[in-house]
Image 1 (cartoon, rainbow, N blue to C red):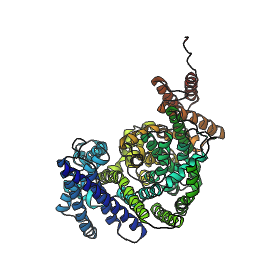
Image 2: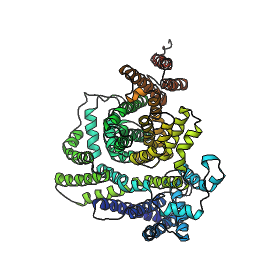
Image 3: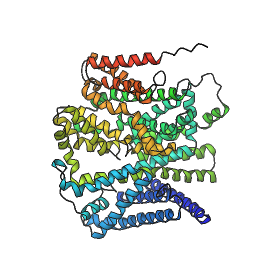
Image 4: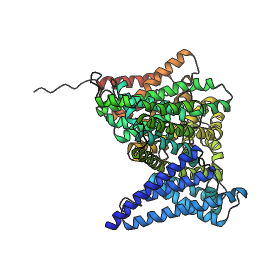
Length: 627
């Protein structure tokens, strides 16, 4: 027992050292002090992340701490390091030879794919590991499948060399995203938290919004929106804003998984909010050949409805959980005064981040310079560099890298999915499949498009996801007669929502890490809270007035009905209106909300009538029994 305890302590020290080292590696790489090729950065990144995962997570919960578990952890970690070192040595020869590979490459690739799947199972969850495994099987069974699902047989050696040695597999775009600004934003968030910026912003929020129900949570929604529409990455947004917002909500009384889910949801929605929309709007304008102002005008009402839904959910959750109004008459605490007076310098790194993003600097460069600004203002403010200061830097690097682990491994798994789609040609067939499978029925085509868009958007930032969806999926909708702008907005929305759609819910993974909550619980809760948002694209396809298309009267009526529908859906999801709701009332409210989606006066009026009836019934207080 003593030997196992000593081994566990050694393991923790090794994990901390590796996390600190990889955190420093990424900061130095962004700074330009270390200049390495993209492939080397990606290989190094996933090698460290998977090694940390294997050393941190047990084989099973029951085997945790056993001698056998420790042996398996070490073997898998060594296999990861060996496979990564092999690729570091081989990648340049493969690239210079035009992609010429050997059988040894295939064998090492097989081992690396296996360790990615196992790391995924341990750190992210069994569901994603199974999905990635199913995709791996497809190239070998595709020859037996009918119609468009048919694919020529791909040799085992070809598949694993493609997924391992090219930039379209486990070292593809998703890992590229994780190894650049995602890890930098996680580290940035850890720096802000460790140096006390979170407490400062929490105090500011408490002062500004103390007379509102769920004041901190509502402030968090606005704060995350501002960051999200600039960053272009829901996961990166969570890493930056979540380090403030999630603790705010937890302090106010929200459960850890609720706080994480709200942050993941609103961070995702920030990318659909004009004027920046995560930079994808600029690409959309270029592809469609329309003015950028047209894209902005089209997106504004759906974006506002999204945030109306989020605010309603936050408000109703607060009422359900008994979170009341903060009294405006309470005297400010001395501690709060000191935090406000001594924390003004924390505004400098935050402003630095926003200004650099508005100046079109890359997100990870902005995060890097913001970290430097934070360190500089702390040195000036405190007028010293001591051991405590150095310890905070090291801990920030460690915590930021550790928070990236499940996200990076999910990205590697997503690379398997995208690699299989590419090598089999299934991705390019999807547009034709949608038209064929929908049998010419627009609604069915929209449902299929939604599913495919969410799958293809897994693990990608907004811009990359939209680029793929715009070329592969959007043409299917335009073939069905849906206007091009509407079709592109439809796939754009679902590309964004893929970041909160389990099992590959990257924004939820990051939020869960900050909240200290179960990853899958945060993911499914965010999905539930975002139900209204999943329906919004259908609303603007069938009600084009939501995209500012139609007469003024049609636009005003559609907005009003949509707001009532969103409120009804949110109340049904949360289970609270003016009081806690029974199951039948929740179902009725959801159906009422859905009925208001269908374009038509009759369905709108039926939905409003049901909502109004339940609203009135829930306000009736039961009579007290006579004594």
